[in-house]
Image (cartoon, rainbow, N blue to C red; front, side, top):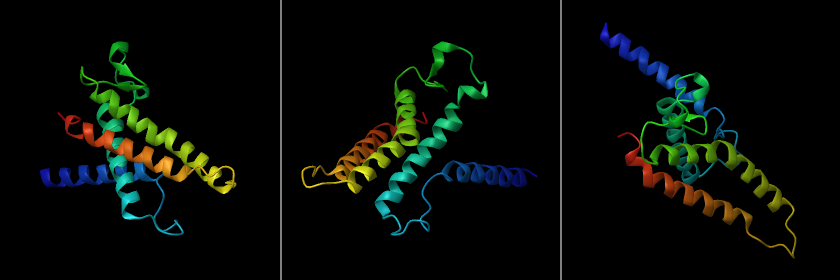
Length: 143
């Protein structure tokens, strides 16, 4: 009986993970299929999203009414800043990155000879920095 419960629980987790990644670009829909570095970037932030949404949990779910333990709509488990850093990174990925990507795409489409700023490189550098920030906190998240 325990085996069936474990299998059911794992199936439920798989469905939740799939639901969280539904908004990510589908490799088959991309005209040039994302490279491994893009897939790795999205995979790392998808795992972070699972941690923030499931482990910390949105306060809209009614978990915690104590205001001192809330940060940007999520519960805090630790007294240090690791949960805050995780929430900041997740919200950047979920909310800010799509807007920044759209701005970058527009800038590239309207590039002129007098405006040769490499917007794509600027965005890639930002993504690299955010990924380094995630790697810096990764071992502290599940303590």
